[in-house]
Image 1 (cartoon, rainbow, N blue to C red):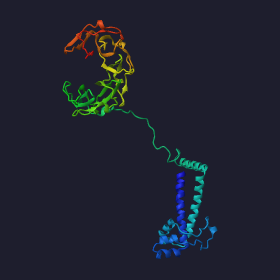
Image 2: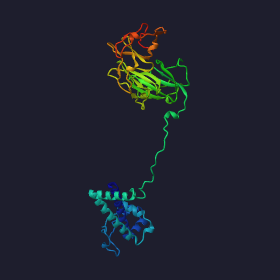
Image 3: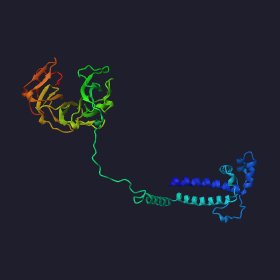
Image 4: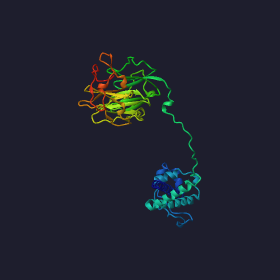
Length: 399
């Protein structure tokens, strides 16, 4: 309201200045015509002239709201307006019209000045304007009445993003340094893939463009990648860290295709772990989903698919423990429970197995070793365990 009023006030002041110049021109019409006709610089001459501003008509001062101007020079704005005035405007009655316009503008100017000087008048004016808006656009008016109607929504079929993707086979390859790519078709997983200098292969798996590929980091978070969004296999791929917010200090521990019906065991280097349903691993954002909570100094270590009825763990002290799978809790997020008790070091690896089938592994020579009877290592969860069987890998890993 203040800006609008001040803008109008400035416009009125400019128009009043022009009107005063027009009135002077009509009072001294002959002299103005002479200057325009014969002077080389009529604008400067008009501004230098001392004009007679006395009335030469039958009208008196009482006929006007504003007093007549006194003698004086014209301003540049007034001189410019007189020079731009059309000849057909030089009529005897024009002076009366100009004075009438000036009087109306003076009344409006007085009202605007009072409005700008009084805050109470301003709020009164705002209330009046809001009242007019309500009368014009209120809910009961033609313009304000609702034109749309509400109806019961019918059944809406919600399609998953992957439903719009053409289903094609791909082979996902990820290097040790975290460069991932997807090649068309199902390439043999024992193929020698090319990597950047100093890098090597870490994961290779068959998938489809509609699959969701899960990345498990050593920070205990799961990240979700859509198969169709993976870079093509012609080059070396792109870093996983450009696709998800995997910290630089975190390592990729596992990479696999999401299967809703599967269950996974996650465990930390401290030897704590639990079972998590497959649906709880999906992340909706780049930042991933925290599933395994870690103590200070600990890191996520293992993520294995649940099969069989027992769990086998091995510690850095080479002691192995086998206990029933039923002793592990199933939850969506947490620190988990103690898997094995360690006097020194922490957890090295774990796997799941069917107790009746025993345990198999490959020895350093690449030969498959099998231990059919695991009674010696069978105990309750969180026990210390016993030394691993003869021929067990020196790296303390089951596979």
